[in-house]
Length: 288
Image 1: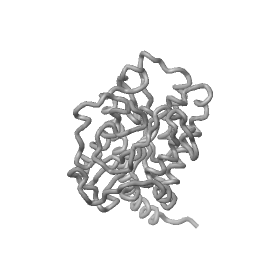
Image 2: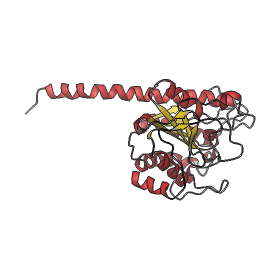
Image 3: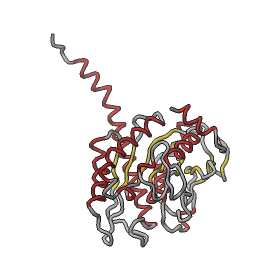
Image 4: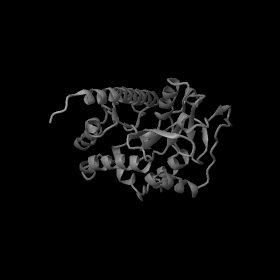
């Protein structure tokens, strides 16, 4: 699959900056030290919060892949799907992950498309509102990023466009297939996949279809390995009763980071237990 991704990258122009300063910051030569995170979904992943001064301050070890496929220090807005793109959850997430390990540099790959239903996140899927192909465009950008780093996680926030009578019943199968497809395409069968909860706003109570999509997000952990669910409890909206406000996005970024780090720690603990489990099994008397 990696060759396929690099083939995608070869047909579009890009600039990869490796082990050279980028506005005073440096991307490591070793791909394993450059941890990549895909940001996918619709507007609440792209971010619609008002940009404030703190959002314009880059972290020395957090980069973003720009619209032109260049690595630059991450500042909001990360996304470029629509002119209203603003503060999202990605920058806060990246800063927390980077702060916890001084040996790691984080690369964010913004690929979310506002208003995109999950059916556009499959090969050939077309989103007429933005005149884009969310899945195919995402594959090309990840192919570029993988030239320099290692994919460590997929962050997903989406579902509003599927919260209707026609699409909600299909959402569980669509999401399961999306996760499997991403992992297969990028050749990372156990890469963490984190899904965020849609906004819960008193001014706009959920109907049965939004509850149905939410139930799919919530049930991921029990049904799909290496997945996590992030709650949106207590977060406010920007006035449109759909998208979070800037403070909400920053808090959501913290919650995604917490979920990711918990998954990584649990997986490491499991890896440490496996040799001991194998040893204990080998010592068990065999029955004839």
